[in-house]
Image (tube, rainbow, N blue to C red; front, side):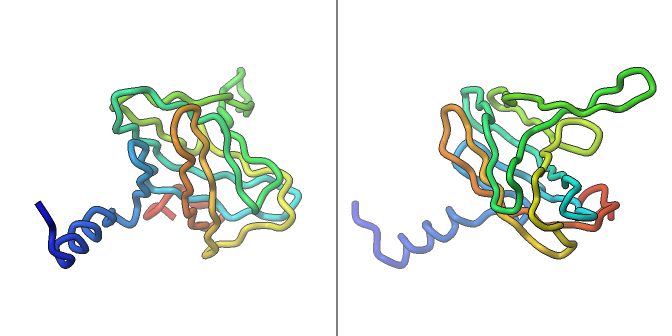
Length: 153
């Protein structure tokens, strides 16, 4: 069966359509990416999003890359007595059919060794690398320094 060109283009365009807050790379969907503006270049910044695994296999986030920071790592915030501490979390597994939320006070992306601060209103690209899936490029909007998420500034 042959598709007329107009039908093919319509199907192609509809297949590429996605909500503005979600960025899809096949079985991995990145929802609501955002970052907080940094105060100065010598201070790290943080980025957040939700990873949704729509496949039947677990997905493991193993690395992050961006041009705005020398290093980007997933960190975990933990309470040790009365003090909150952050440490690298290592690979992040997203079980099949489930999601993992990176949010303030929990798992989050630390953007370190920054040559300059990131400012509210800017956008940067963050590349997520998975063990057995194609890399996912995410456009991350920068919110204010005290932001708590999109719509909660």
